[in-house]
Image (cartoon, rainbow, N blue to C red; front, side, top):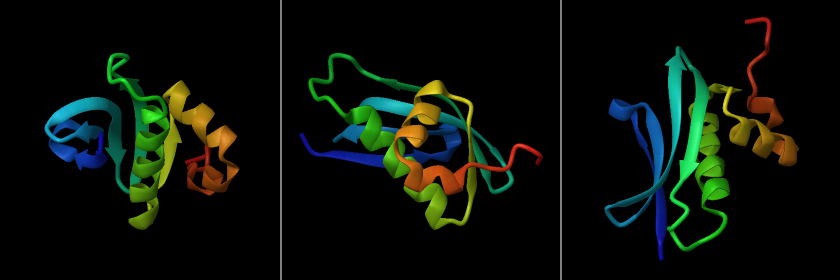
Length: 96
């Protein structure tokens, strides 16, 4: 299985795919250059562990590459950032 992560802005989500098959998604809302992650899910029948982490890492890397910030409203994204403190700089100030 060779997965790719793509931004699908018309659906307000990042998707992790194996070819044309969507294995998971990270839904978001854009607020200017801030991305609010609202929900993450991965197909439990996808047959590969770590897909959620791969998805979140790629989505956060994409936001970083564009100079954006994130609000991790989704508990999976929030927990992932807690476990990977080198991504904590992406979290938008709560006072904004």
